[in-house]
Length: 116
Image 1 (cartoon, rainbow, N blue to C red):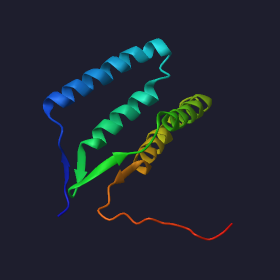
Image 2 (image 1 turned 135 degrees about the vertical axis):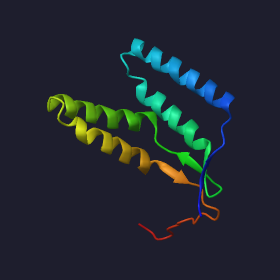
Image 3 (image 1 turned 180 degrees about the horizontal axis):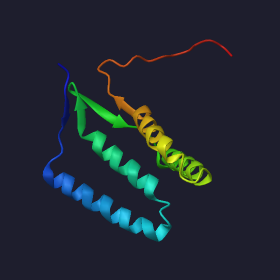
Image 4 (image 1 turned 45 degrees about the vertical axis):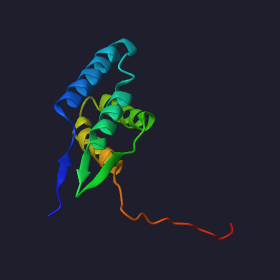
């Protein structure tokens, strides 16, 4: 059976949550514009400590990609007077899952030698 495991220590978790909490608090001074980067920082740290069947996982989204995703969803929610919020959560979850990778033991390299 394949299993997930999380290898961070309680001290590492405490330090990480302290940093994320301070950055979250500081985001109020930037009108919450740094929130996407804080989220990406959290996801990168989290998936750096997760393994699946002994293979490391990796989160590949960037802060700018997250910013675009959140901005579009916020804008659509505002335009529809809050109705779009029911579509926002699934879209953000799909965005996150599209940016999670599992390291392969023998990665296949796809090389195209054809001329354009």
